[in-house]
Structure formats: structure tokens, C-alpha cells
Image (cartoon, rainbow, N blue to C red; front, side):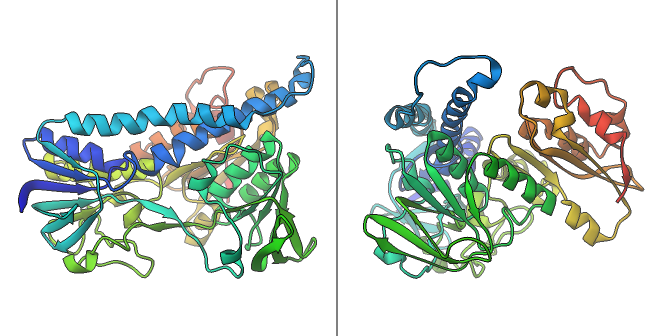
Length: 457
């Protein structure tokens, strides 16, 4: 048995950063990765998908070139092999860099194999038992494959396997109308595929406000994406060379036929083969590791970070998990999950930036509040770029004057949301931004104008 001061299982966003901090503090650290160094973001999430988003944006702008007075000779086409090669060239160095930096770190030992708990203080990896007084779990998650009738009879793709596809689907059927599914739907529509999105709910991304969901629907429908809502009892099958999806919808034919099928119905944590029962670590009914406000499990000396703890499903929440654990353990800086403000983006084009409470949540809370909205067609930057779909919406506490939440769906929405977020962390009143002078011409310059139109909710 080999003893370390700390063991880190998994190399997503929080694991490597925490391992480096622990080793730099003088601890001996074992870090274990069973598959790809860097986790979901680097290998199958943010980095590769945003590379595809960039290629899809280029394709879209070439198609629209004439609107801007730019004449393109001939018929443009998308070379999927070159698109895939560009994507791989972008994310591969990140994967390699994570592994290289860990192997070169002092007091760090890297194991490239599967880890399983054998006791609360022991982990078995590659036939060797390692022990430590502190063990940190950062094993991430993977695509959820639902128990759907007929799925065992057809080939299907997930967000991971779709990235390996270097041909253009004739017709991509996407089951799931939320963040992952919609990003891929727009990407492949812009590449030239016919795309149909099938969603069981009555609207896309149903966690958002109804006006946001409708705005997203309008953006995607305007590009020719077929959207089927209220799809009940979804079944899949084969018809010749096609994959078919049977849906019971209020509108449209009962069956959709396509060449490829993408499942984008959610994620599940990679906790089912870790031996957590041997360590006595508690999980919820979906397999997420239960943690407290400082990411400690019910077993002293074991922490869970990143997607596997169910406290956030984003790269930035995983990184913040690292900051919370490192702050409490190494910096004498008491930090908590409850200190952070929910924030995320939907990276269709134009994107959605979201922070804090939705309008529905504010209404449900019953607190006195103010609201203001502005159409993106009234924002100079959007108008100049001929990208006027979407809107901005802010919510403010009527008594404290502090921001409660905001949605920016439109050009630069993923960036323009941050000034609001920063003021929320500062607990500053909205009047600070109302009196600010922003740079022209930008999207953010209209935030003070938007705040000048606040009205009771």
C-alpha cells in the first residue's frame, strides 16, 4: 500500500487545479484519471463545441454575405473533415497540456487507470491500493441514455460521439430541446443539414421564462430548424436506411425520418462504478454525491467537486468548487457554495446570458420588484450587425434596489451579462450602473438606458 497526503480522482476543471495547490502546499498527491485528461469541457464539451459554433458562424456569414454587400462567387460548401480537423487541433493541445503539467509537478504522482474505493481511506487503481487522509472526487458526468422504445434497434449519437462525425448528416434528428441539443441543432443546420428538434415539454429550454423560450424558438425557427413540441411517448425505429422518431404531438406528422439521431435529454454522474458504497459515501436517487455547503460528503475526509455533486453542471461551477475547497483547506478563507450566484449561457447564435432569478421565480417569491425589457432591434450594435433578434430583461428588488436577475438573449448576451453579475456580487444598487458611462457602440452601453425604464413587476 502506498500512502499519500491526498488523492484526487478525476481531472476535470476542479481536480487538476486542486491537486496543484495541494502539492504546492507541501502535500504528496496522487491524481487518477481513467480516460481523458481535462474532463468534459476540454474533450467533449466547451472547447470542441465552441470550435464548431465558430465554424458554423463562418458558414452562416458566408451564406448572408450578400446582405452586407459582399459577393461570394460560386456555391459555398462546408468541408466537414476540415471542420473536424480544426476542432481537434484546438482541443487536443489542452488535453495534452493538462496531462503534461500534472506529470511534471513536484510531489505529484499520476495514475492513468480506473479508481475504486475499497474503504473510506483507500482507493484501488491498476491493482494497487493507495491510501490518504483526504480524498477528492471529481469524476464528472456523461450523456444520459433514456429507456426509449426502439433505441436498442438503431444507431444513435450523444454529445461525445457526434464530435467524431466527419460527414454532414442529411437530416439530424435531435431529441431534447435544451442547451446541448439546441447548440448542436443550430451548428448542423448552418453546416447544411436538415434538422428537427423533438421536445417533450410545451416549449424549448423550459427552465427559462416563457418569453426567453419563445425568443430562442424564434431564432432557431428563422434558420429553418423544425421544432416539434409537446412530443409524448417518443419511440424510435428504422425505415429502410432512415432512422424514424415516432411522436405524439399536437401539431405535425406523427413520425419524423432522418439519417442521424442525437440524444440530448440530460446528463448523469460518473459515480456508478466508483465503489462509493465501500466508502459509505451517500448519494441521491440520481447518483449525485451529496455534499454540504463546503462540498464535504457525509464521510469525513472525502469531498466531491464538479458535475458529480449535483451542485452545478458547468465548467465555471466546477472551477468555483476548486476555489471553495482550496479556500477552506489552504487559505483560511471560509467559502461556501451558497455564496455563488447562478449564472450560465446558451451558446446558440445569438447567445443567451443568464444570471440570478428568472421573472417566474421573482413572481413566485412575492417580493416587490421592478422589471425592464428592451428589444435587441433597439440596440445600435445589434442593428448595425443586422442581428436584431432577442431582447434584454432585468429584474430589481424594489426595496434594496439590488439586481435579482437578468436575461440577455442577443448579440454579445454572453458577455454583456457580466457587468450585472459583478454588481450582484458587490451587492450594489442598480443606480450605480444607471449613472455609469459605457463605451459606444456596444451592447452594454444600453444597460443604463434599460434600467431607466424600470417599472413595477
